[in-house]
Structure formats: C-alpha cells, structure tokens
Length: 319
Image (cartoon, rainbow, N blue to C red; front, side):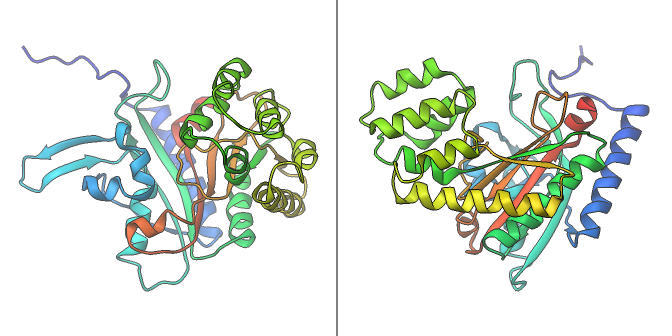
C-alpha cells in the first residue's frame, strides 16, 4: 500500500506561512538589489564533484546523492548554495573581475543540524567576489545588519571573529582544526580541558583557549593577548579590531558590532573574518558569514570572496 506519511524533517507550507515567506523573500531581495547585488538562480541539482569542491567538501555528509534515471549519472541535491555560486563565478561569469551576486532558494540537508530540526532551509544570501580585505567585508557586513532590520528584528548585533586567531592559538597542535572548532562551539570548558590535556601548547595559548569557551573572548580579551601568542595572532587581532571599529562607524549605532573571538565557522573554508547576526530575544544566530579567499581556487578561479547567508524559515519562526 502506498504511504502518505510525511517525511521527517520536510514540511509543506501554505496559506499565511507561504505568504510570509514570499513577502520576506521579496523584501530582502529588493534590499540586495539596491545594494548592487545581482540575483542568480542555480538549479537544485549539481554534479557531486562540483558540490564537493572547495566549500562543498565540508558538506559531504549533508549532501543527498542519487543516480539520475534520465542517464545524467550521479547527481546531488544541493545542501548549500555557496559552492554553486563559486561554480558560476568560475565558469559562466569568469570574465567579470568583480562580482556581487545574491540568491534565494531551497536547500536540503541529509540530516537535521539538531535533533528534531528541519532538513530543509530557504537559504538566502550574498557573495562578493573579487575584492579583498576590509572594503569587501564592510560592504557585506553592513548589508547583513540591514537584512536583520529588514526582517523586523530589534536590537540586532553582529558578533565578529577571525579564524586566524584560532589557527594561531593551535598552531603547535596535532589535532585537526575541525575538532578545535567543534569543541569551542560547544562552549564547554570541561570538553576543552580534556582536549588540552593531550596537547603540548604553551600556557598562554591554553589559557586563551579556555577563556574563549567561558564567554570572555571580547575586544578586551583580544587586546590582552596581543604580544603573548605569536605574530599570526597579532596580525589577525589587528585586522579584527580595525574592522569592528570601522563597521561601528558605518552602521552608526543601528546595529551593534562587537568582537568575539569565539565565533566559529560553520564550515572550514573560511580564511579570515567571521561573523554571526543575533537579535534581542532570539537564542540562535539569524545569519552567518565571513571571508573565504582560498576556497575559489578549488573551483578553478583564484579570487578573494566574502559573503553571508540566512534561512528565511528560521527568520520567520524566530520573529
């Protein structure tokens, strides 16, 4: 007998919920267009090699792969749109030196990120390619702040970190960077102490790492450790603090901007500045972003890049 039971983690949307999503999508895409970003609409299917290059290789366990009955071989349902934007920039738009692209569409995860969570997201975001350093970061982060405001959230905040800080702290470790990011994301001093017990890191680095998971990795924390870790830490610190200062001027108090070295990347393709957006009364981050200069080369075009994305369903449910 055929079954009509719903698939766990995948839901229908209709009526007021569907209207709310389309309205929010239109408002945000209008905002992106005003900021000079051109919309691209990639297909929901890709070849696995394309999806698993660069950013996609960190998404392999979240990507549904199947054999195409029409004879196109093995295909993948997208679990993130950034690899698709990278492919488009490296192929169809390869002659454009600077690209400001935006997108909005469904992605599907092989399994939910949290127990009982959804496997579907309406991922919406921007990618700014071809511009290195602070100018690109400020453009994207300014737009991220405006996006939260356009979605109707009050007392919004951007927490800004830098992956270079963590890389500098664990430079002498044999443990993979991915394990460090997972431990710090949990914000558990006990878990981190267990990992540190098997490492030969300096006392200064170990102390700084423990402080990161106790919620004190703010601007004062960054400044207090300059000169005590290594040159890479100092360079990342300067870049982070300068950007936070400049962005606060740019946003003029409409969105709070704070340094937080404990902001961790969702995927390890990030190469510099990281950020997450929050709002008063909302426990989870509303959006995530950062710089990923080294990722594009894996798609055949070596160029700097930065961007952010959010899930429209998450914004609606949090509002």
